Length: 175
Image (cartoon, rainbow, N blue to C red; front, top):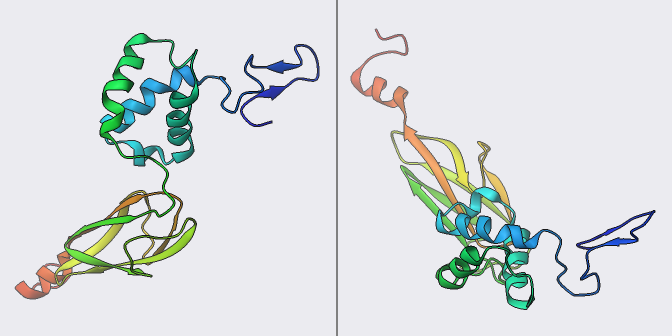
């Protein structure tokens, strides 16, 4: 079952809030981690929007056991509002590229949930594409991303050493 465990032997179920829409399993322990990931701008590295969304909703609806640490609860109430909501019905794709450009198909400001976008890194003269980072960490070019939430991706380019050698008149072997 969702957010709980049914046992074949007693106790029959784990979780005293079994019938509530947001049950307490280990939720109080995640508040500090989720908030720290937001503050450190490391949410995309986790690539687990469901956890972040669950914690946001949990902190809104749970009245008794929001947090076992009053320090974390105070930090949550003070700083969580500084960061955007995790889920959106119209996710956006933010792409950063230095040393080249990125094409998107389709290219539009907002996407539908689960829409697939084909992205292609195009290096400027004298540069070569090496990898993607952020919400996409691979070397495949072009690549496809599925929009299940707001995404931030960086196209990583480096100076093309073979281009500078051909300009200086050197071959690949330095002659």
